[in-house]
Image (cartoon, rainbow, N blue to C red; front, side, top):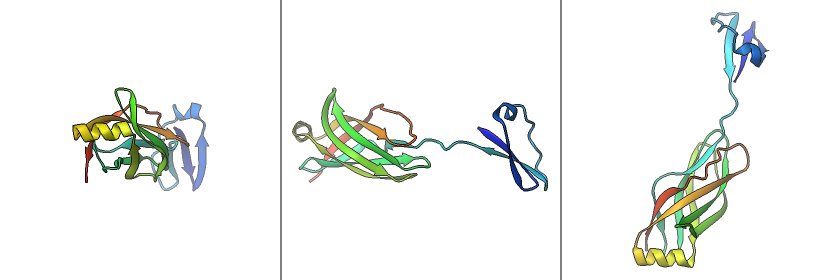
Length: 146
C-alpha cells in the first residue's frame, strides 16, 4: 500500500518506510490524506453447479470474471482423472460473466447418455495478466437436453 498526502492541491508521495509511522492527516481545506492500493488481480471462476449439454456433446458453463481487468483462460472437464471435455482459450470482460461452451469427448457423451447426469470436475486455467492462480476443481453436474 502506498500513502500520499495532498497538500494545497499537490500530491506528495510518502515513502513506504515512513508511511507505516506517518500519522493520519485530519482532513482540512489545506490537507487531505490519500491511500492508494495496487489493482487487485482478477479471478476467473465457474458460477453455479449445473451445465446443460446437447445430444452432440456441446455444453455451456456460466463463468464469471471478478476483478478490475478482463480474464482469459482455458477449461478442462474431468472425472476420476480422465478428461471428458475441454475448451481452449476464451475471454470474459472484467466484472462480467457469460456462458463458456465446451465439447465433450466420445467417452463423455457416452457416460452422460448412460447415466442421464454426470458429475465432473471443472478446472479453469487462467492465463495472461495479473490473476489468482487457482486450479482447484469445482464440481459441476452435466445434464442432457434435447
